Length: 70
Image (cartoon, rainbow, N blue to C red; front, side):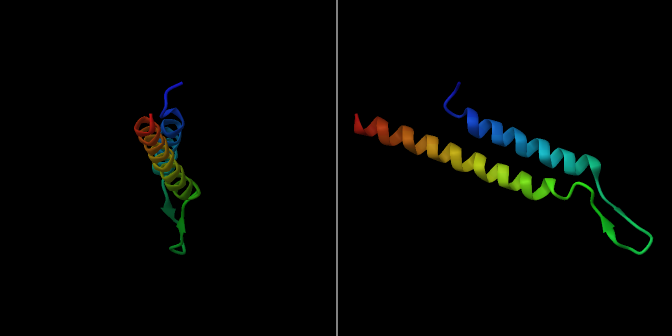
């Protein structure tokens, strides 16, 4: 397993969630109400993207700290 494998998995998950939200789409009903069946994918996609960047940043800084301490 690579050192950035967890962040890569979260990044792929975020792309997958955004793709689902885009492919399912949204529509307006007769009363003008916006219907988005996959709305839950949007905040989960942003959460997965944030976790991806945070884990990559953690791995990068951990590598730099241990490399400088040796």
